[in-house]
Image (tube, rainbow, N blue to C red; front, side, top):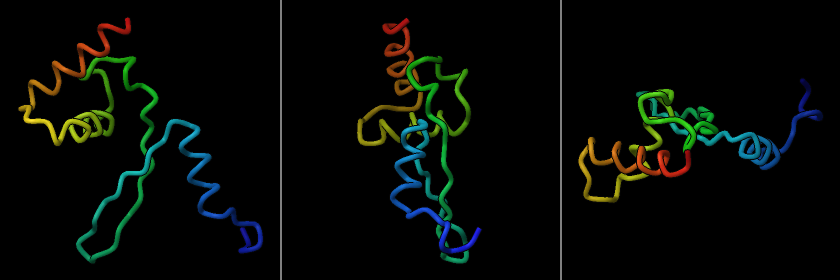
Length: 85
């Protein structure tokens, strides 16, 4: 694809967000940052253990500022799913 045909970055972001994808940043040892797009469309629809590893990590990060241990975070998330089903 030539430079003339490349989409602007904001369009790529908007398209990915509309598809249910969120950016996850990986910090590499050589001080580079790699962006990985993670599908979170199953959040709120599947219980914690049925989610992909990326979605599980997203759930853990979502509660990072709450004083909850690992198991409490899972229970809190699963209760949200249970109430939706």
